[in-house]
Image (cartoon, rainbow, N blue to C red; front, side, top):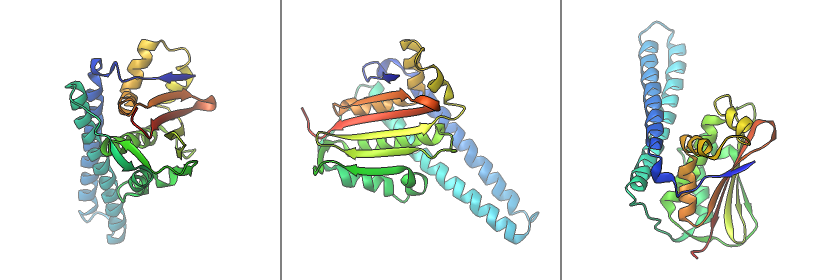
Length: 238
């Protein structure tokens, strides 16, 4: 089943920002827990070698949590503008291939996501009229959603396909227990509840940015508990 979530209803769903703040609180709790563990490992109760390994592991976890925190704060910034009806798409000629590859290969995100992403070129077009900040945030929202909701028994996959008329971002992942309800019930859930579910899962933000670029977002329940997110963004301004 395919279900599109549109931008038109977004300003009515102010609970989305509460979901983002819930995620921020969870990250801050994780950072605090990691700091407490570092303090424990440095207290002398463990051997120097074991303490060093454990401290390095917790420091790595803190780094990843801070990276996600910065990403979520950017979401808050975008949501605030949407709710104030002040968000505009500052579309300008952009080297779209380079933009998306640089984002995936960024030192902050490559360790988490680079192995999931594949690039396919079915067109020689390199320039698209997009808002660089919003498109980069859209890509990160797709990747972080997959990161939070995927069952890692199967590696998620995001294909970025440069077609003649549009850039396609297609993410597929095996839903974990927290997300499995979508794959089992999306075909029967009523539209009002579905909209609320999608908002809770940040999908409306992805759709909003896609539609600002005259594109679209679709969410599909695939067989065997898999989820597909599909974004299409045209190169040109109509």
